[in-house]
Length: 267
Image 1 (cartoon, rainbow, N blue to C red):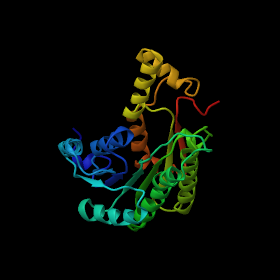
Image 2 (image 1 turned 60 degrees about the vertical axis):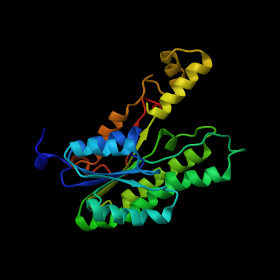
Image 3 (image 1 turned 180 degrees about the vertical axis):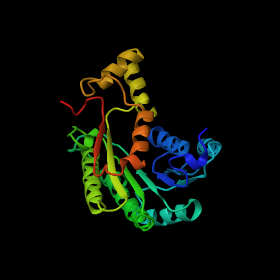
């Protein structure tokens, strides 16, 4: 194992929203492996699963705590950031990964779903950035990484709130990056295509059952023509890209919309 003093993120604190599964958990493990203390976050109270995750992070030799908050409650975000800073240290790396989804035509889309999705997918990153950036600037170092989507770059039918929120998140990323361009604090976005998460695997399983397909055929059907590589992005690949954007080597990557989509947006 690399000595703690030589780990690239030793002494840093990373807050990853929505980090108890999928992409967020992969990012938490990656940054912990590099020596960062981890603020795990989810919308529900701590469970046996989160306790096991904390134990895994502690076994890597880093401090870690779990914080529960529904990010739709924008007014509670700044107090949570202050609590993390008090318990783990000031936040150096902010990864806005949490997001929610609802699929339905704009003609029938429930207004309450629209409001909830914009609150979590777009307003929450605004609040976390506003809460964390001042201390980053005061200490002279910081990384803000927003998990957008290919849906931040193209239109998708029946996902009006998701597409609107991710387009907005990309705009927020660029605006923050420009405001901080002369500082040691960067802001960038990652735009994944289809990612093989537990949620997507459930969609594959449901499609296979519904259409009488084997898993391989169901995966191919789901990927379809939208991901030319015909392969899923993995959570580990996204975590590795996050690691790079959080590194010293990415100091001049600012306002990027980094696609990891198997060629989805190349056409």
